[in-house]
Length: 179
Ligand SMILES: [Zn+2]
Ligand SMILES: [Zn+2]
Image (cartoon, rainbow, N blue to C red; front, side, top):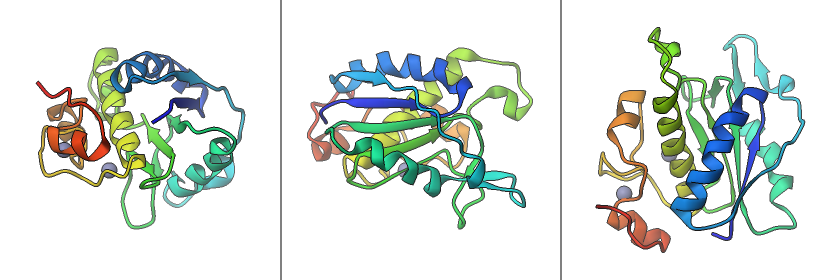
């Protein structure tokens, strides 16, 4: 991985993007920069589902990957879906460079609980690393503590760590940070 461009697609995802800019640069050891892009996602809204089509928004990020060699990570705060699932926390192109995460369901308030900024940032970081892992060609991992484990709910996100397990590290060509 050469670097990461973070795209806060919705205004309120800028704070999370700023945090991820620091933490992902540290975790992956690559430059991380925020690009503020103004594109409307209104046409990707499905009024029956009251959600936005994840794959369509992900496609909008593709042109940003042209002309550079960095991974592109979009950050959004609306609820995302793909037709076969009730919702998704994010989506990525396996082995390609674009990924998208939604922080909509990562807020404690979504579950009727008091706000917890630290927990929101921790969850966002894990989901970001997870989707970026897919862009590096990593599939889901059986190890429930590995960041590449598939999360059905936030409880699963909270159990896992923010790093690749030794097997996933090896597969992605990273030195393992698993302790
Ligand atoms: Zn996944
Ligand atoms: Zn793993």
